[in-house]
Structures are given as structure tokens and as C-alpha cells.
Amino acid sequence: MSTHLTDILKYQPELKEAGVSDAQAEIHARKLAELIDGKLVTREYLNNRLKVLENSILLRMGGMLIAAISILFMLLKYHS
Image (tube, rainbow, N blue to C red):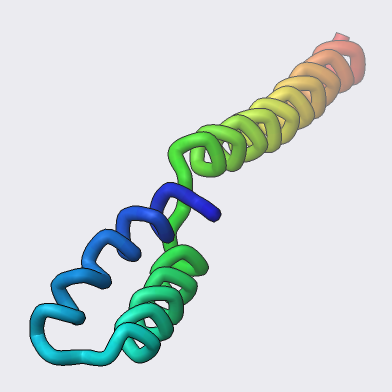
């Protein structure tokens, strides 16, 4: 059970105090937790995605730099 799910289940007693039956309060809390848990993103996930994007950008920039240097050498050789 994830941290978010356990946090949401803490509000189950409040539902009971408001007159909701035990079974309904538990189901409501669990379903709400499942919905929220499926939509939240962790900091670790975002950091990993950022690293992937950074690596992709570095590879593309490296490729463009190599292409630019190659073109520059070809132009220098052609005009010499």
C-alpha cells in the first residue's frame, strides 16, 4: 500500500462520523486513493525523466556539433 493510499485511508473515520457506514467509508476511501495514486507522479520519476531528456539533448547537440565541424572542414578543404 502506498503512502498516498494510507494517508487517504486516515479520513475514513471522518466519513464514519458523518454517518457513512463502515463498509461504504472504506470502499470510498480506497477508490479515492486508487484514483489519486494513479495520477500522482513522484519526484524520483520526474528526476529520471529529466535525465533521459538531458541525455537526449546532449546527444543531439553533439551530433549537430560534429556535423558543423565536418562541414567547416569540408569547406576549408574545398576552398584551399
